[in-house]
Amino acid sequence: MKNKHLTDEEIQLYALDADACAPALVAHIQHCAHCQQEVLTYQLLAEGIKTQEKAVFDFDLADLVMEQLPQPKPTSDRPILYMIGGIMAVMIVVMGELFGSSFIGLFAYAQPILIGLVLTATIALTAFLGIDMYQKYKAQMKALNYY
Image 1: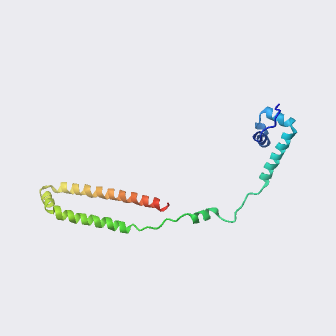
Image 2: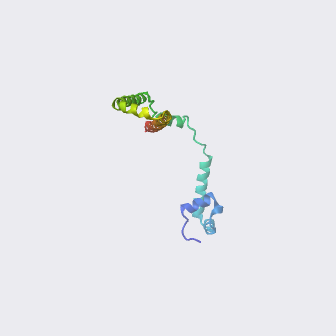
Image 3: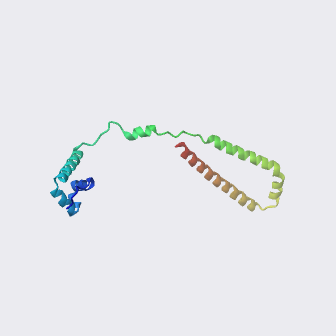
């Protein structure tokens, strides 16, 4: 048997679940009046906590938190699309002016099927890459709107 009193953790363990305690701990509590008083105090405290009714708020915490969060700003993507379209149109006009005669000579000697395949692949690839780039841009802007 111990000559010292038990620690608070040991007393709390006995007060809440005596079956889970070591036999030496149970024997000490059965013979020590001071430790028995501490166990009784913890048991009364636990019973008092259990009998208290649960706290009920008269407000909705989720609504209060949501009101304080920054709202994303609505953005219009039209100006960016117009800017990209304008830049592409200017580039096409400049390229046509600079290399127009060379392109005409290139297409004059090539077979029509080859021209069709090259143009189709070029347009499809440009559209795919442009759409992918635009979707990444929108995702990044959406992420930035929440910070």
